[in-house]
Image: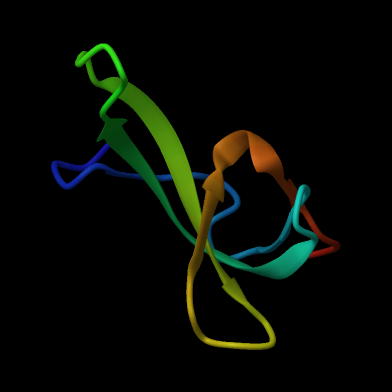
Length: 72
C-alpha cells in the first residue's frame, strides 16, 4: 500500500463488473479508507473505483463486489 491509501491490485487496468449494479468498466484504483461508524470508532474498508465504458465518471464500490470480465 502506498502512503496515500492506494493499493496495487492485479485487476487494476482490467475490465470488471460491479456485481450488484451490473456496471462494467475499467478498474482504476483500489483504496483503503477509514469510515466513521455510529459508535465513533472508524473502520477500515477497501473501496474500488471503476471507470464505466459508457461514461467517464469513476464509480466506487466495495472490493468484494467486483469480478473480472474476459481477457485483459
